[in-house]
Every structure is written in C-alpha cells, then in structure tokens.
Image (cartoon, rainbow, N blue to C red; front, side):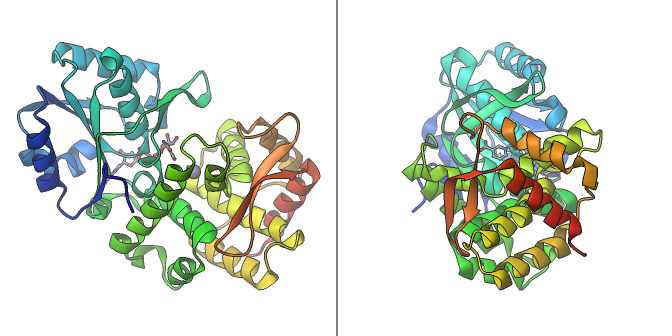
Amino acid sequence: MLPKNILITQNPGSDLQKFLSEKKYTKIIVLADENTAVNCYPLVKDSLPAHSLIKIQSGEEAKNLHTCSIIWQAMTEARLDRHSALVIIGGGVLGDMGGFCAATYKRGIDFITLPTTLLAQADACIGGKLGIDFSHFKNHIGVFQEPALTLIDSGFLKTLPKNELRSGFAEVIKHALISDKKIWDEIRARELTDQPWETLVPKSVEFKSSIVQQDPYEKGLRKILNAGHTIGHALESFFLADGNRILHGEAIAAGLVAECYLATKRGLLDKPSMQEISNYVLKVFGKLSIEENKIKEIAERCLQDKKNKGNSVLGVLPNGIGRALWDVEISLGEIEDCLSYYQRLQT
Ligand SMILES: NC(=O)c1ccc[n+]([C@@H]2O[C@H](COP(=O)([O-])OP(=O)(O)OC[C@H]3O[C@@H](n4cnc5c(N)ncnc54)[C@H](O)[C@@H]3O)[C@@H](O)[C@H]2O)c1
Ligand SMILES: [Zn+2]
C-alpha cells in the first residue's frame, strides 16, 4: 500500500486543487525549469490558486547552492511565511533541490512534488532524500524530508525526450530485476517506446515505497536499490571526468549487466537469465565504449562509493531474478573482470 502522501493520478490538476483547498496554505509558489515551465506547468496552471512562478535553468549543472539562493530569494521576495507551500514541477534535479529549499526555508515549509521525468516518477520522488551537489560531490549536502504530497501522472512523460525516458527506464528495469520476475518478463517483451507507463510506473513506485517504508534510513534492505549502481556510478563518474558525460540511467544499465555477470560467476544467477538481461539491456541502451586500458581506473572508482566500508567495495548482486543480496563484498579484481566481460560483449 502506498503511503497517504503519494498519489498515482491521471488528473493531477484536480487532485492538486482539492489538496490545496483542504490545506489552506497562505501562499503558493511554483518551481519549474525552462522545459517543464513550457511542457508541464500549463497542464496544471489553471488548477492552482494565485501564485508566483520561479523558473530556473534545467540540468544537473544547476543543482547547486547558487540556484538554491535564487530559489530562497524568490521565496523571500514573495513573502512566504511558514504556512506557505512550494509546488515543484520537474524531474529529479528540481525535486531534490526544490525539496531541499523548502525543507530549509524558515526551518521548513510544505512542498508538493509533481515529478515529470520517468526517473523522478519511478525513483527519485520516493524516499524523502533531498539535496544538492557541492564542490564536485553529488548530493553532498541534503536532508531527509517527505513532501506533503507527491502526484504521479505518467501523462507528463509524453513530452519527455527519448534519451531521458531511456535513462529512467534503467531504474524501472532495476526495480523489476530485484523485485518481481513477472514484471521483468512483461518489460522484456516490449521495446522502450511500447511500455505501458500508466501501469509500469505504479509498480515501480509501489516497490520502492515498500522498501523505503521498511528501511527509511538505508540501514539494510534499502541498499538493494543500489543494484547496478556500484559499477554504474564508477562508469558515470569516469565518463564525466573524461569530458564525455553520459546520463545516469545509461551508466546504471551497463552496471546492471556487469553486476549480473558477477552474480552468475558466484552461482547466484543462472547463465540463461544473465544472457537474457544482457541481450535486452544492450538492445535498448547499446553499449558504452570502454577502452581496455581504462578498466583498472574505472574499477578503482568503485572505492569512492558512499556505501563502502573501509577499503572493500560493498555491492548488491541479484540472487536469481526478483531478489537481491546487499553488502556483498566485491574485490577490485572481480570488478575489473566484470568490466572486461562487458567490454567484450557483442552488440
Ligand atoms: N532523491 C532521490 O532519491 C534520487 C534518486 C535518483 C536520482 N535522483 C536525482 O535525480 C536527478 C536526475 O533527475 P532526472 O533524470 O529527472 O533529470 P532532470 O531533472 O535534469 O530532467 C531531465 C531533463 O528533462 C527535462 N524535463 C523534465 N520533465 C520533462 C517533461 N515532462 N517534458 C519535457 N522535458 C522534461 C528537464 O528540464 C531536464 O532538461 C539527479 O540529480 C539525481 O541525483 C534523486
Ligand atoms: Zn539511480
């Protein structure tokens, strides 16, 4: 069961209107970026009471303290008191940063999130993690705080660029692989653009939300959500440093394939399942090009992972399709082996 503050809807405008009229906030301010201001805000604008709009620059590059100052300044100029609310219309960047600004403005005001990317709907908007990047460290400054309301409408995805849709799809695939073989079988029967988002997004939301309810502060079980992320994050940061930025989900998709290989080597995942996962992921995402002589450097990046303890890499491995183990100690040699396997794959 979903918590009361998460609502799956096909009519976000009327749900928003109903919620706001019950809450009787003193003032409403809306946060959007240049893309969501054009593609998403107009879909709910008329359902909002009088409000002002804060429009910021889109993208991860803007997820920093400077943009927070712009948001806090706009909130101050609009004279928001502690009984006001911020309505966030955007992807994971806006959700994380807008939520952080609301959670800290005057020690915290309510915020309402309307996630508009697949990544935000299936993943980022659930679990209360808010924050910004700082001094080249991702999500370095932040807090845990739940929104007053999250309204998830897969209809927003209609205008999302295909590469962004595909990036979020990696998290949807991850959720299926660690929770439910049946969902995975449904997913792999279709192409990316043929997926039934109106039923698939709620499945992802329900799964993540049930994990988060059982382990809100990531002491144990919640760590399974990091499947694909040990190697995926290393790839993401390697390509970023190389001046060749890739989207988060593109890195996670490759991470999932590489980590499934290790699960098979350790006898946790049978070979046909591993091949089925590799084939589908490569068909949808293609293959990242990794040079042989960079493998060691990428593997060493896994040591930077926040989830590690001391000098050993602690990762997540699938345990068959539909289950996963966390805090699995993985050696650097094994990670190099996974990356070599990935690099040798034929597309
Ligand atoms: N809090 C968490 O638990 C959590 C989990 C995963 C990721 N994240 C964070 O999420 C962020 C990535 O989020 P994202 O992938 O949604 O990226 P994003 O917010 O940058 O959005 C991607 C792009 O799509 C545009 N866009 C958004 N919705 C649109 C729509 N409906 N139509 C057209 N364009 C649209 C945006 O303007 C942006 O250019 C990262 O900063 C990451 O750290 C947070
Ligand atoms: Zn992720």
